[in-house]
Length: 327
Image (tube, rainbow, N blue to C red):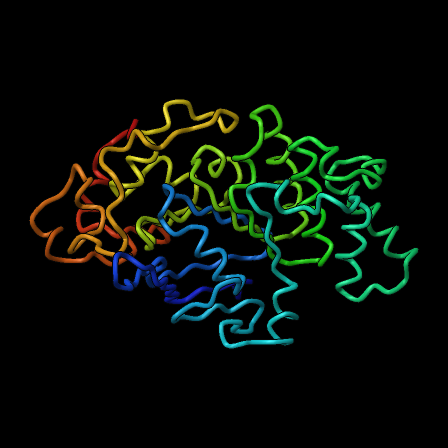
């Protein structure tokens, strides 16, 4: 089965000014991943790990320095202009803050009709009917169409943002921290909506720092640290048998596994190194309880440990012998 999205060796670099000079930062460093139709891939990691940059590069909101982004059989990393705009309609993004991503002046109906018109629906009556169907699909009543974003709750705004993304009839939905800006009381509603969309054969890429949300949503999880993937596995496998010290630390930092409780990952020992000057060898070694001399000298690659379970740790097999949860 050919993946709907296949990312290969993706590299994204930023230039930053420090003092009198300009420095380069590799925000995404050789990332590769795949997503099949009707599945959810979760990407997790602390702030600064490169998750959002990766999502924006996949959508070509920023240009990669190297690599391939093959979506529905086409390498969109090589496209530009009208060809890129057409290909990108099949991928839509839902942002973290629904209020800032919605127009404060337009009604919900006007926003949805405008988005529907952008994909070629010229008949006004048809646009109105599609807008009604979209708002019902995300679990809202039709009277919301006459309101502005200011009149809605956070959960309603996020549903509207999802409806607008669906107006392009995408095959892939990219959600960047889709519930982190919401009250815990409405998180379950958005999570259930995303699960319903997955069941409609929509592929979803969920970017999050909250492992509990990803555990509930994702079929497969990729863990990022300082621009690289350090572990990739099926969700149940990853949580029951994490094979990278960073993944173990992330799981241990969440004492309450409920997806409807806000989690803080600052409990992980140490701080993320400066991405402009990453450590030699393994990038996680400065915070790792398993570190040894080899870790400072040899940069581990992402490799198969057991079938589809991948880890970028020299001692993954040794870690796998540790029985029980990392908590």
